[in-house]
Length: 86
Image 1 (cartoon, one colour):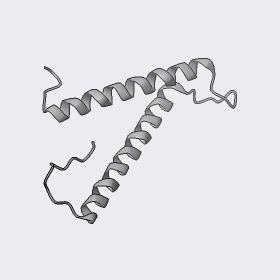
Image 2 (image 1 turned 135 degrees about the vertical axis):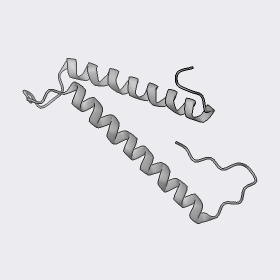
Image 3 (image 1 turned 90 degrees about the vertical axis):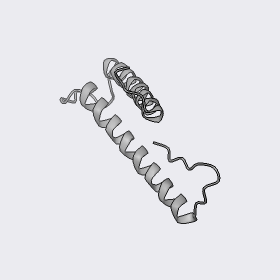
Image 4 (image 1 turned 90 degrees about the horizontal axis):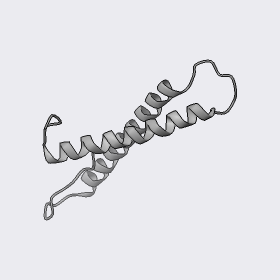
């Protein structure tokens, strides 16, 4: 969700700061959603040990990779104004 300003359009410092703040909030929200989604999907509720086991680690790796892949695809589609259905 990177904020883009067309070249040649004047932008003041407050606008730049506002866009940077909005971008940071978006990235924090995205990270929080990723963390919660993958945790809920991959980590057992009954903690048996302090560290993640091999299965949980593997699940989290796949979950994060898929989440970023889908986020990238959606971002590209929104940027090109294409329909996700083709």
